[in-house]
Length: 379
Image 1 (cartoon, rainbow, N blue to C red):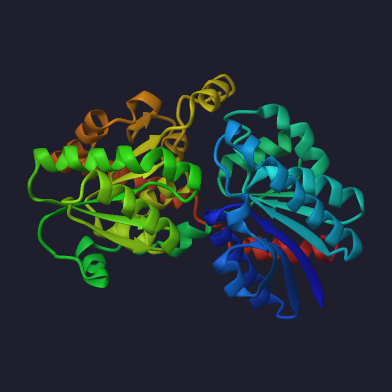
Image 2 (image 1 turned 30 degrees about the vertical axis):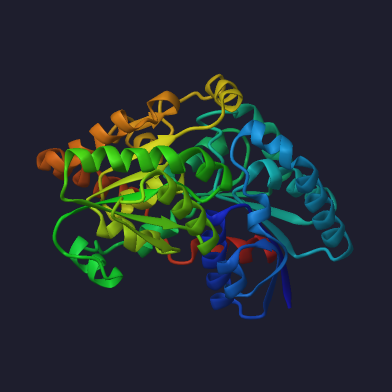
């Protein structure tokens, strides 16, 4: 039996991990995965020593309060894998947690893979030296990343983004609304305030206020809100109930793609959701807010003018980004209504999204899984 250690650090990593586990088992059924994952990875067959929720921390300063528990988890994880070395260790996203773990595990003679590159080409490029000491193979999702890592002496393979293959056929709003039991008439704005607790604390209120602002301008609007799980749904629902009890909003958990597809426009937290919205082909407004210290530290390290993947991949601002002080009802509301009112702009945006979609599709089915098995067998 092949034993694979695996750690996913947040909801998006849990999705990637579940897909990877499924693909590997399809190619080689006699595989055991153990480490840290969420519900989807567990359903795919991962044995979890800890859960992904325990690693989901957003921002630099926010990590400080969670540091004792994070260090405790890291010690427990390393003790386990030192006494039971896997055939390969895979860190999925969560670079601040996974790279130190990968480095220590690699020193003990275990080959390591990191799946989904951190944005070192955008900020914190100094981490390349640490990455070179931590990983045997970097699996990257965007074509330009492979050459970037190779230039710095780090073995990398472009495997594409799995969602780009899953979301090949565009789902119409009518189809998605029927699936979710939503009315076919009227305009719908989707609210996607994130998957981390810190994101929800920062964004639940301004998202609610923005929805209220939009409804005051357009009485025909209704809203849908998707959260990762029921606990997050209850949290955001309580915020919205306190701030705007009359707001016409339907809540869903774990149905992000369908909720996005049902909407005419999406307000979302910066992160993987922006890529999902692009692949679903819906106009969006990206928001991002962290505490003052985190923002001051981050803005000095970011090399690119954008934070959202659609803009980074396009090389220009094709969707609006409302960061920090711009994350307010008036600014976000106006940009949301712009997408509802300008059909020509939406059509041009969708064409651009389709072009980027084609560029990031995986070059081969199961490419990430094949790379994992190849490195185990000496590739």
